View 1: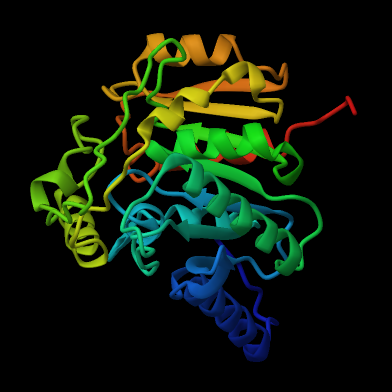
View 2: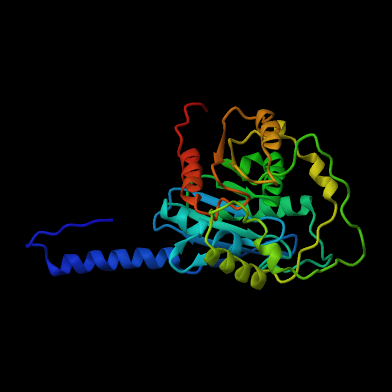
Length: 311
């Protein structure tokens, strides 16, 4: 941002502009606010960052292994990696949910997550945002990786609660069948590893080593124990034809988890005509954190703010 001042510009005006810019920068880098959403007797952590006067709300849902703050609010000195900050800078109130056993949300008594339970927890968080954000309208929902399929389950069952569905790192081909997950009495509770935390960053020159190292450190601190899932056959209820919410699909060009064949099958069978598919050139599974994040954010905001001429 560039300013020019005439000789008559007052010192007070210059000071006011400086303080305004400083406050804006501090707001973008401030720690997120933690809310508690209680559903089915369980307390879920919901993180928030917001613009001064939000024009809309967006709820973010993390992937299989790592929770919201590593995925969506990565802070790296000298770099811009936080998706939450980037969306706040575009004028939104942004929320990020930790599912059971992730980040600041404890496991429940069963010790397990399931797709159906997670979809209903997500619905509760969406309803909380609608009631408490102070922003008119329903929230948009963005799911990454495993979160993309949980988001789809929620959208299929509660379309009235979502203004738009944004999926990235989408992994499940519509014709694939998921087998039942492990059904042991005791969850494994395996320790997470640095190699696993760095495993999504595969595209050449897509992100700095400094940022990867920061992600690994924050991820291991937030999620030292891998969350256990079962009843994976519940994902077989996923059906793109049952998605009637306006949908944006974002694919990393080099994402091995979300190949083009899977994206094509999903996109062409969607039950909504209001849809878009954007490919992040040079991106992989973590394109929302990598150097193409500005393009990722532009795709999200462009879809949310597109002209809508039908009702």
